[in-house]
Image 1 (spheres, each protein chain N blue to C red):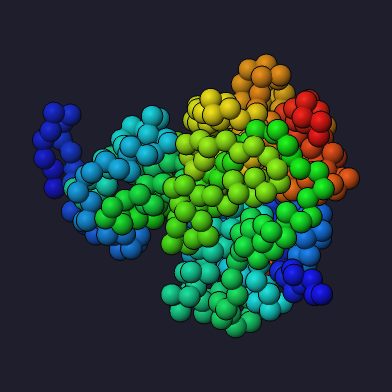
Image 2 (image 1 turned 90 degrees about the horizontal axis):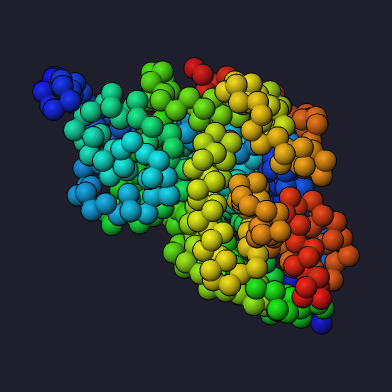
Length: 290
Length: 184
């Protein structure tokens, strides 16, 4: 019998956060993908996508900074797999702009000294795991269901917006992360904050706005009965952990979705990933025998 | 052109709307002030003008008020406004262009946000990838805000979440080329 997930190969774009602040996300992504049969070849010499600072300053700069990575992946003849939703939307935006703007594409080709055809796509790992690996396959690999763990799936902005660029789920009421967590055996709580912004892009420059938005989200998730939030974004993760106020014991832990997949699949290193969090989830996990 | 309002004389730049429309590609004239953008905006509580007011002011040519507003910088870039607009007015692109023009003309009201962007891009130009520890320290020096966030900062350092040295990679030249061309 052939492997159902054979042939999933991507150029992996970690993005800057996954090299430092979100190292545990990178480690969990690599371990989980290896277990699920997704082959990730890291894009050699990848560079920053430019993030919000790029497109807030200059459209040309934003498109070519992100586009540089698209050219590298095209050289590998692979679609890109990306973990950070902010990188995801910047790379997809550059691809979209390059497809419709010949002049921009020619300028990028000239900087990179290779012709760029805008043929390969950029996918988010949540999309790849839900739709290419498939939740049925994921379910078959679960050895330690996350029974009793009450979770709020938090999508934030760039996994679902703008819908003309990132259309793998509904922009107002997405479901794939909820369904994935349900597949892992967790108790997923329905709540209305799943696509609200946490203010992550202003976390360092306008702290009071970020703190206000984080407090609202945490309150909403708590009211829905969640004991923790789950994200696929390193900026949301850092912001939700750093901008929560109150006593350490009252704070809501925040998981990367790949960490929870790792726990459910029985990957031993999962404990080390969780040890990097600013809000420790170990008490919560222990209370559910996990 | 000038006209007198309760606040005094307002200067109207009749070409401003057309300029924003051209640079952003957004259909600014389609806005009929339904307020959907402002009602869903997470930063609205901290804005001097609400998003739908910014659009109206662009239509009217109130160039200076728009470009010196806080609103364009406290926008969290969440894209909810453009996603929900019934007339498909791309407010995200409008905000981008307004920030671009505000920067070009040195009319920035929210210095810390613009400083953040400048330092962020300066780091990329230098190393090709973001180095979070330098970003935080440089922003702190620039905004003279040295002591906030010390506790989470130290905790992050101890947990190995802040790399001490930036990443190095060979092809940095092509990144610097991009920055040089962007300046032309």
